[in-house]
Length: 280
Image 1 (cartoon, rainbow, N blue to C red):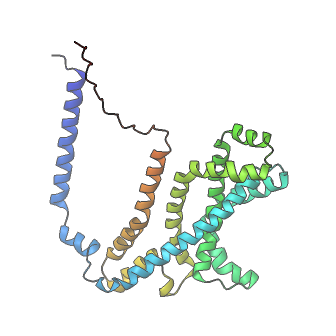
Image 2 (image 1 turned 90 degrees about the vertical axis):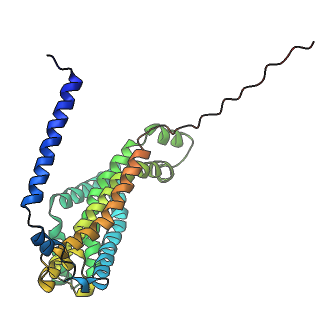
C-alpha cells in the first residue's frame, strides 16, 4: 500500500506529538515540584522586596538604558555621517572608533569609566553617569553602522533631484536622506535598545549603593539576603521581560509595517440600479 505525501505528513506529525506528550508526562512525574517551588518561586521569603526594592531596580535599569540609548543615538548618527564624509580624516576617525568599540567587551568600558576615569582624570562619576556614558560609547558604535546602512538604502535619485533643484548638500541630507533612513532602521534600533537594556547589568562591576542598584544586582544580592534560592533572579528576569517584550513587539510591528505589504482596501458595496422601464 502506497501512502500519499499528505498521509505520510499526518503520520509523522502524530508520532512527533506522541513523543512530545510522553516526554512532558515523564518530566511531570520525575520533577520534584516542591523543590522547584522552594528554589524558584518562594515568593513568601522575598515579600519585603515588593514594592520598594523591585521598583528601585526597575527604575534604575530604565534610566540607565534610556540615557545610554539617547546619547548613543546622537553619537551614532554623527559617526555614521563621518563614516560617509568625503573628507578622509573623518572617515578614518569614525572607522577606528567603530571598529575599536565593537571589538572589545563592553565590560571593559564600564571598568575603564568606573575606575580608570577617576585615576587618570580625577573624575568622580555617579553611577547613572557611568552607566549612561558606557552604554552610549558601546551602543554608538553599533548604532552608527545601522544608521549608515539606512542612509545608503535611501534612493540616490531623491538626493540628486534635490541637488538639481539647488538645495545644498547639508540640507538635502537633513531634510530628505536622514528622515527616510530613520524610518528604515527603526526596527534594528529598537533591537539595539533591547541589547542596551541587558548590557546595563554590567554596571555591577563598578560597585554601587543600594539606591542605585539595577535589576541584576538586586537579584544577585537577594540570593544571599533572603535565602530564597533562585527566586530573586526569577523576579529580576521577569522585570527585564517587562522592558524588553514590549520593545520586541514594537520592533516586529514596525517591521511588518515597513515590509511593503499593501494596505487592504475596503471593498465598495455593489449597488444595483433598477432597469428603466419603457414608456408605454
